[in-house]
Image (cartoon, rainbow over all chains, first blue to last red; front, side, top):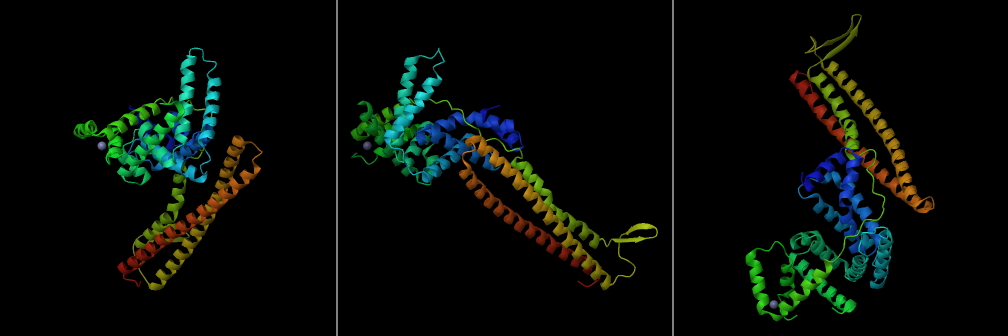
Amino acid sequence: MSLAEQDDALIRAALEGSARSWDQLVRRHETQVYNFSLRLTGNPADALDLMQEVFLGVYRNLHRFRGESQFSTWLFRIAHNKAIDMARRRPSSTSLESALEDAGDLIEARWQQLDDVPEQDPQALLDERQRNALLLAQMAALPLEQRLVVELKVFQSLTFEEIAELQDISANTAKTRFYTALRRLKALMEQDHGM
Amino acid sequence: MACERTATLVADHFDDTLVPLQREALDQHARHCADCAQALDEARQTHAHLRTWQPQRVPAWSRPALPSAPQKRSRLRWAWWQWAPLAVSCVLALAVVLNVQISTGSQGMAIRFGASSTPDTAQLEARLAAFDAQYQAALQTLTQTLMQQQATDNARLMEAVIDSVVEQFGDSTARSLEQVIAYFESQREQDLQLLQASYQQLADSDYATIRSVEQLAMLVQGGQP
Ligand SMILES: [Zn+2]
């Protein structure tokens, strides 16, 4: 059974009332949704809120899922809309500085969490911490619509046509947004470590 | 950027759906356009930088649980309420069409099909009046049951909401809890009104159908509609 077929089976069982299948379905996708949420919100507290809303949205609309697309595609359509809803409700308070700070806290927490794992290479972990914190801060400096295009293109591998449909814009506008975002990120990267 | 194609060209470079011919045309342009060549080079670096993201482990969080009464089951539970008036109507319609005669006498209950030996309009009028009364009574009972059911559901759902909120945020969030409950109540109120309205509508449309079936039956029997 393919991953998509497994998803379909879990969805059917969840709709029949199987709490265990629903739980499994959430666990299968939560890492992807959490990382998506983290890159979009810039901090773990908001990321958890967004993830919560995404899965509640999935639950409420599960009976409408017709299997025409893959569940993960459908899931990220909901995630995309929830991310926009959330940004509208909470006008951007995340400055570059606070995003960096939050990211630092996150990485610190993770660092402590991983202290007990001896087989990890500390140097590799340190790089990972710095890289992710920096990326979060740089992503946070983008306007939401650009951040979403970058997220959907670079991390979710959507086509520009799919992104255009989600954002209700033309494919060309999606491409321009993507290019503008990359240029902005490039400038921030140079600022951060003289690339 | 001086070249007007740069934005599209860079974006297309990261488009996996590009066919080989398109990709070749893209590369061809970049080989001869310094603007695009530089932009493409920088974009590749930025893209590679973004891809260094290391997936974060999900912190402990309370996964939204599937409520004990799942959507599908609760919809099924409503189903028989919705169809009950139709079922009642169908039985009555069948009785009218087949001209079923139920009489209770000293020999017990007797059921007879077909036209009675002396069909008259007064008898049909009487039966229609009885049908009206039965229908109204059945509808009233169903509506009451529906409302009681709704009240029970309200209470049960409210408990579930309170439990989950308290579990998540502790008792200290009494204020936000009140807001949640107020919102919840207004939503349920709207739901209830909507449900009752559509229920009434459904029942009415069944009733209208059934009356026309009766009139047809009377015409067939040679009575007056
Ligand atoms: Zn060019």
